[in-house]
Amino acid sequence: GAVVSQHPSRVICKSGTSVKIECRSLDFQATTMFWYRQFPKQSLMLMATSNEGSKATYEQGVEKDKFLINHASLTLSTLTVTSAHPEDSSFYICSASQDRFNQPQHFGDGTRLSIL
Amino acid sequence: DQQVKQNSPSLSVQEGRISILNCDYTNSMFDYFLWYKKYPAEGPTFLISISSIKDKNEDGRFTVFLNKSAKHLSLHIVPSQPGDSAVYFCAASEAGTASKLTFGTGTRLQVTL
Image 1 (tube, rainbow over the protein chains, first blue to last red):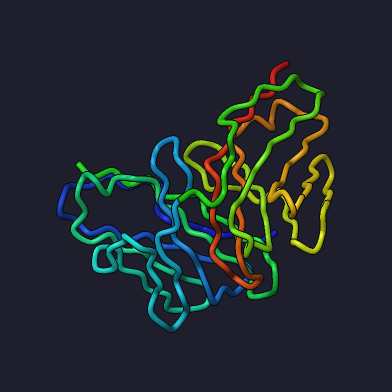
Image 2: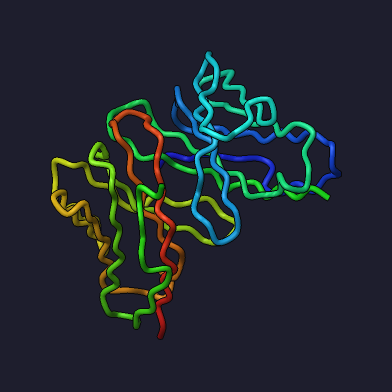
């Protein structure tokens, strides 16, 4: 089945640091990828839609200058949390689906971000 | 506004019995529905999906039922196995191709011996 790889799986860093998370579709091309955030014991909340070759589409309430998304190729999207603060600590997950009708999104294993 | 709801936060089922997980939605524009299984500190794993033109889809031990008039879907797992213990999320999208998903709040399934 479709495989999505996310790296790193865990990051611990100091407040003020910028952190980059990579999401790769390993065996298919994805024009669109998605970035989610999950707080403890809560559902996955969509942050933004990453579009290859164009600007990302952010959900209401998500700061685009805080969460920079780059979808440079059909197999790679990156999320950079800029000047991270403790309140940015969360579980970030990406997903991608094949560019065909009604294809399920497949998820990476997530990145646990802890800001000290 | 929670457009996809899973009203049971947890469910306990004995091994070998049927597990039934329920999901309700409010957005009539949703036309594609999915179930995911999730373990802690991992990404969701896709289980099964159904489009709005169907009312049932089956894959091995997993069957999803869709009742469009009631805006309700359910996931049946039979027979339940201890390895099925996880959090199950239902999700919905409005259009077919690479559309964003709206997730429910999740149901924690515990399959006991």
